[in-house]
Length: 330
Image 1 (cartoon, rainbow, N blue to C red):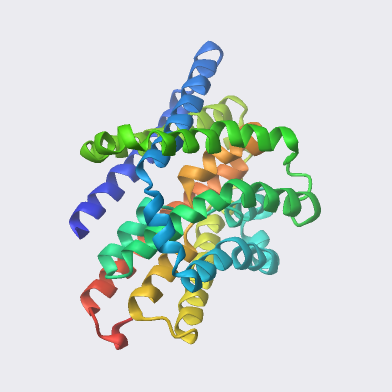
Image 2: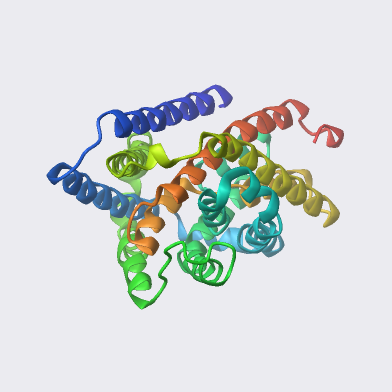
């Protein structure tokens, strides 16, 4: 399982780096850019349709019965994370500058990941059914809570004036591109669930391809607009440090809170992985819906944070797997 997970992470990361390099070296523009934009939107709709097909309503109901765990994960994802970024603003903004700090604030507003949260929980020996439910419910809550948080923090907070426009048209756009395909996927489960399960590995490539398209389109736009020439390399280095700092703070707090609340070992592992991670697969499409375009000051922190969380969580999952049932090992 661990070798499989590591292989998937490497392929996904390599694809992101290749897409970024192509966006810088061979950017699309004009009719090609419009074509890639249409293709990206279509891939996003397909992505959430397949999420709807894959997610069993029974698993959501079962997971929701573990309400204490779900409440803790949702609290860290949508409350603690944004508050932590705002409190750490002086340190984070000194490292990355005002533009990229807005990206970190956007990261804080996003829901948890689904695939990697579940995979890391499984590797570490955590509560997998609860992880499936937590991550899935987090994505659903994110459809409503992420735009609301962005509208609040980007209008009145540290990132005011960064370009967010969360109104009725934004809600309609998010519902049409994200929520509606998901609901249609749920309705089509009786006919497509077995097909999707049979071709799970092939369907998984849709997730990766969607992100690669988003990255290529965004980096192409940035290249054409001269974004990279304006980017401070010191801030880029500081972004890596800021993401590591932020992830470390949140993981330490999720772990401490779960232990203090007397959760069992399996639930502690689930809370740490599901409560500290942020979704690139959901964050990139939502950026298009909320901001109207792919903003590289927002996408770059999300991409860096995603890679940092994969590397850190992979090592932590391997450590907990070796520790087994020994409470002292985690």
